[in-house]
Length: 390
Image (cartoon, rainbow, N blue to C red; front, side):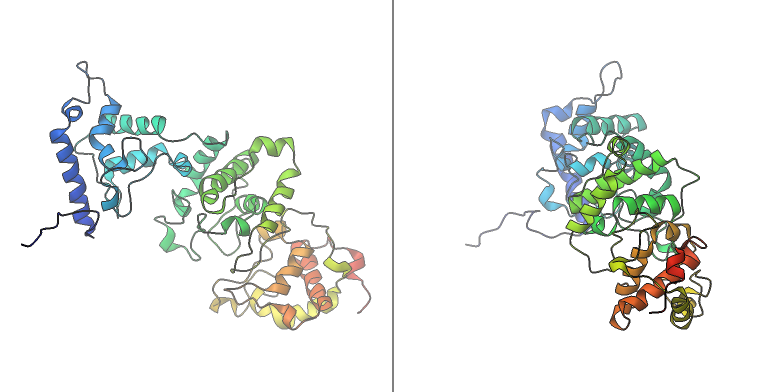
């Protein structure tokens, strides 16, 4: 006698359309047999009962406790969202209302705008936020979230992963803050510099004239705590701590970058935020004349004679050569930074590691020339500019 195996959604891979149907079927079954479902989600006076709304429409997938642990969880891919996890605190109210109203593409989250009114959608979202979602550990998170939503999400996406409507129009694409190792490459001070002055050869514009320093600090902390902490275990430093100890972020971010594993994507800006008067490493003194001769023979074809990144070869290079005249470059590139960048090069670009063919002194020469001619013109160290020929 043939034994018939019972059908199981958990064991049977189904297309997305069937998974959605199965989720709705489970919801209908629950509504047919659960006494709680038979009750109205409004009182006799017309007052909305958000707890009943959640139970009737959401708990079948997201679970009674909002943690995604429901009978339907094994049949859904991706699984139902867990509102109790720390990263959930970064979900904006507006985004959640949109998700309930219009659904989420690529998931079993269907639109409820036909079944629920706008007030009911807002009520159930507020219930989820107040009942299941954790409060942010950063008291300045609300300010950072607002700044991010208004200025950053259009490119970097609401989840900080670079998946936005603008992503296909930008080259290079927007930064994915959720990528593993992101905090090792992007120290807090570097991010503040990037938001303030922008990033050369990208669509990242500077916000120095649009945002206050407090807003910039808040949005950087929000990104680090909301998007980067979940993958790297690195949390930002609150604005209150920054004001109390101005020197602490620099030391803290340097320590974080030093302790984090070095990624395979190239140079880490370890010296961002240090004084621009910091001397060349190892006591080296760059010779500007020799550095200029080398730059014009080897670097100008990409970076341009004026250092603007528009050399003859720049048209064919992607990503584009660095623009030394960009405000961000002039804030980030001191002598030590230039020396390391020229020495190590950058993977994934046409910038080679010159330490394979040049001596440290030769690298110091071209670093000094770039610093004095482009980064801080007229502000170079006379001793370095007139150093004896080596």
